[in-house]
Length: 312
Image (cartoon, rainbow, N blue to C red; front, side):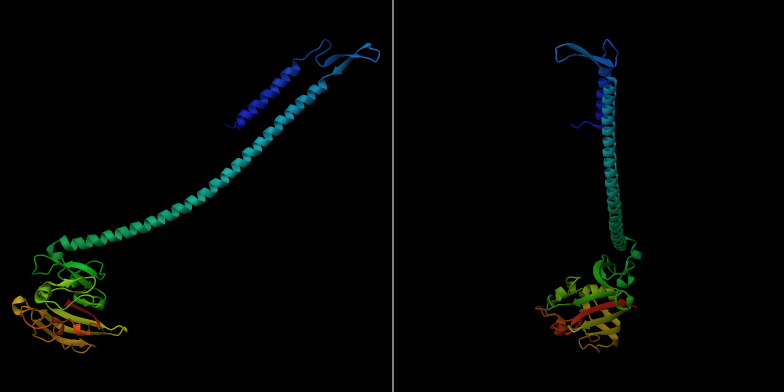
């Protein structure tokens, strides 16, 4: 273990004091500052010389004093150097620490903001799901959350249990309840009656909402129908009908639609008072859903289509 500065100084002072004590205690019969030295001349005759030790004593004292002073100066210099180095390190670390604190605060703020926004969005959706039935959304036009397109749960008036639907808030800045979307042709739409009655597919991708659900929504009031189509070159068109409804199972989900507008031309596969038809081995009405109602299967290799309803 290296001695510290205090120990070095105390040891040096002790050496100095001890040297002074030895010098001060040295005496002769003549005086405390004289020393007799017996000499012999070249005839062996005894001679006596008296040496003055006071100057030697002073030189020794001065030498020791200078040595101690120099040591103290060097020690002070070393201490100052270490102190300056420590201060420089502390300033550097303080700057780094401030930068790290600033980064931490910024990251924490961003994370808390994202977390709060996420929780608020979930709370809004949960309130829609579990709140007062009078305040639950009956369709996408009734959703009162942040109006971002996505999946929401609705509670139609004549349904005991709600169900998930995809809501589009980008078209006309209103809430369209999407009941069919075809994007890439990966989902098989050539299906039977029961499958179309209950619905199939992925609400985030391609899907058919289901005949019974569409009927449950449209029997609540007056609804419009909108069909959006586009090709791979980015060309887009739409058809809009001011009146739209789907009957119940006893009518084979008969379609009522009228009041066309848009730039796609009236869609031949949408006819008023037409029953929904499917590919069904049991001989239920029709031959192919794709050729009759809202499904544009004949364009599946060319067009993307989105079909939705909105209350009026």
